[in-house]
Image (cartoon, rainbow over all chains, first blue to last red; front, side, top):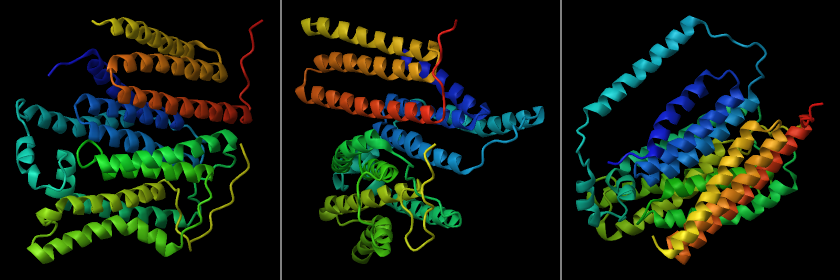
Length: 315
Length: 101
């Protein structure tokens, strides 16, 4: 393992930015620091040779999480009273941080430094998998049960977000006055982003990419569209929107149950159809993950609920 | 080191120089509008030069085309976000800095 100047810079910058994000009094500055932290984390994952995670971290950690934070920032009342943290609070914060980090650090130090992990076993089994890229094979075939449950958790998160937001009737991201420049840029970007999403989905079988990355790009596209209102999308009927949200989970579960009916093992795909089944699951997952992320960010509101308030005047 | 590297190297160094000047501008300029100017203009030029240098070094037309596409998207995104930040600041009443007398 060679450590370059960039790695040293990352190792110094990451904790410094993380600390700054916590201790900054200004909430907006804190959110911006979390944005920067996400970008630098993505670079770190890339340096560690994990481009799949780097892509997800950049899109989710920096992108969607940032949108969620900014949305929350817009909803909570402005800071009237500046809270001063007492020395006791600082000591408590430090104690919690040390208590959280120490076991993780010890666990990392306890790892054998020359371990190859499960890479060899994965590569040995990969001819039987539905994808030749190891990360996709693990996510959609070897450990597909975990992935299935993750999608279930995402769906539950949307239900929770809708339930929590319903009362205040907020939820749309529509900007008061997006302006001609943003609308034009979004019109240019949307087709490109849809193509990129499709390419990522298709590449996932053989290279870094797949449903999560493709879905995130699709989700970001939907968020951009709903901020600007640049594209006039006919509103989907409620059953169609809800169906599309749940589609990925439903197809995943259906394939798993079907495999169980044939083979007796849940999610144990018949080998000759494994590639096609994984692609079908990934394609529907991409659509659902995109919609779920957009719904979490507030880009999609459930129809039939309270109407969103009209946009406020331009600031 | 090939002949092409001698073309790429000055481009990369020039790109790094513009990134550095953009950062100095961000830290030293007096108000939001001039800082935006430093950040978007200088960094976009720097990125273009770095992309040109890397495209030459890549030796592949497909990689070069992808790099140029990435630069064009970055241009679009940064021009748009620069405009949005400046417009929001002007509407919020952020005054440009005045020359000290």
